[in-house]
Image 1 (tube, rainbow, N blue to C red):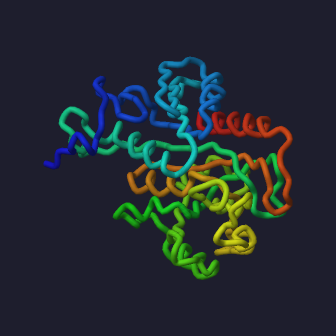
Image 2 (image 1 turned 135 degrees about the vertical axis):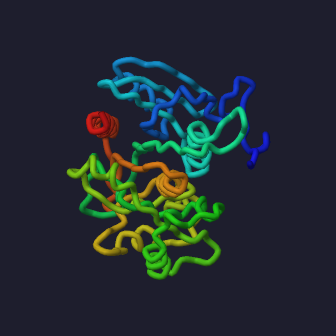
Image 3 (image 1 turned 90 degrees about the horizontal axis):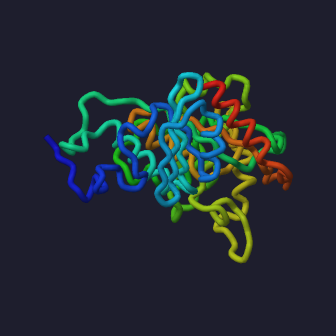
Length: 287
């Protein structure tokens, strides 16, 4: 029996998982993940009742009931590195025995749904619209620090790498598909490939004072297609969520509010409205 060391599974003096500061009974099986900590309150204000409100650093969790269904809303902060913390700690909460520090024989599956904001990479995607991520394309390197490759779409990943003539000094792009059972809840929303960057400026082709290594990154992504799937938008969390979540046996999905279009150079003048619509639609479909 493998016992997980104190330095690997870090718990607080209250027997809570370290970063999220949560106990096992403080999260639901259906979890909405958001980057912005302020967005957690927007979601939980729609609950019929709230059971728990927990905060530690940028990680905020509200768990409550809506229409008889228990839901957690958790702020992850920005970036794939934070997703690495959040997904691993959520899995530990449901699939590791904290008393014996051993992995449970019977595993629990969580539904992890990310609601984020994003910029479109196709001219025909309107600002202030919604988009469901059918595939996550990762430039973030998270997947390459783990042994499992079972969830990676290898052929599709290699096709993009070849098409983009991807530089050897950058991490190898990887692609992971969303969970079909969650995608099926949103048949009426536009679908696409979401690219996940490890940063906001150079990694997404933005130029302030430093020039990015790939000067035509957005144009390359705009023109890529695989089995009629196109790269539709850019953000900073999805590929890590899909890879880690599904490698650990959980269901994952990202829905993005499109608040800008990098090709047409448009930006939303009231993005909070489409974010509110995204939240309302998601709660309606999952409850």
